[in-house]
Length: 488
Ligand code: ACM
Ligand code: ZN
Figure 1 (cartoon, rainbow, N blue to C red):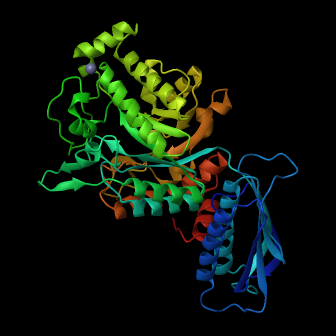
Figure 2: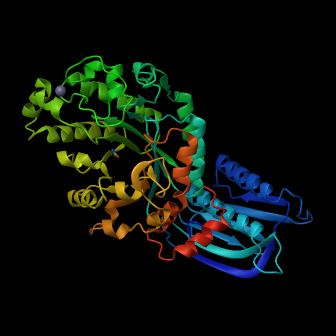
């Protein structure tokens, strides 16, 4: 199994998989989630046994229970027991039940495909008892849909991959220099203009998600225990926004949605009151559409030349008593964090936001280099932080030296297994929320490229995120991976 359950006892005795299954629940388990779990498990199960090999004389029963345990247990803890009479699943949280079903699916798969010794047959389900829980609350995967666009149906498949690996945070990078990807009621030019770019060969490239499609993604995610974190990257990486609303720049002109990768010197103005009011309205719309706790406002790679030359920005610096342009970005983050806090949200930003004293509210994503400096700075400033270091968890890197697609870096799946949370803990453990892998798509133009990058490293990622420790025995992991047929 991947991730390996924290506590597992396997028994010699086996339970015989039958074609008939009776699903039961206790009253506290909502009908909608119950129906989803049953459908998920049942379709999977009947795919496994669809050759009609198994007898129909007996009924296997699967009992779901959403209820407190008598002892105190960690968040999202679950209990799974297979004995010769029934399969029992219990958790205190819905996510606990959702994770238990994924574990059970892996157990069923292995039991069906791998006989244990010469006397066994497919259909013998070894009895077992599992007590399991995640080491970190943040187990994420990111997707850049700006550089290349992936439609909402594909995003749902991406969430399916995540769910099978017990990942619970989907970071959706919805805007960048090369495209805006969200239908906006308040500012429709964002999707009308900002979603489309003219590529070098003159063709138009782009797309965006309608509000209905976003809601379909959110529903899909919720049933799988995944929270969706929208990212609107400001004040840099904002050329698609400027192409739609040029007045948001320090000096307005005709901007274009970029067709090349890199860092733009043109960024949003932080001096004009109109820009601040506009951003508050935009983030209100985003906060209303996405039900989760978090909104990501980017903050990475924002060169300050325009602000240095802008009278509005310089006036803001003076009026607010700020030290410099970095502090102006800190002020911007603080202002928006306060606005979003009033809407019940917590903001997240890339680690550059620490350059400008953003206060302790924002959660910091440590990404530059190996992330250790950024993590330490966040920790020492009292900010909560999430790890996604460039040299370790950027999945747009190539998988090996033979691969031609991807960034110049090579990150082997074995490297991911060696990820050490202990390099990033400095005393106040509770500030470290967890980690995620980032999947930027400058070099990943289609699904096949993307899948190759994710498939090779997602299971190793799942292992280290769930258990919080590097994997020492790579071959033992390899055996477990093979048991899953190396599927995503
Ligand atoms: C980043 O990779 N620019 C956060
Ligand atoms: Zn300005």
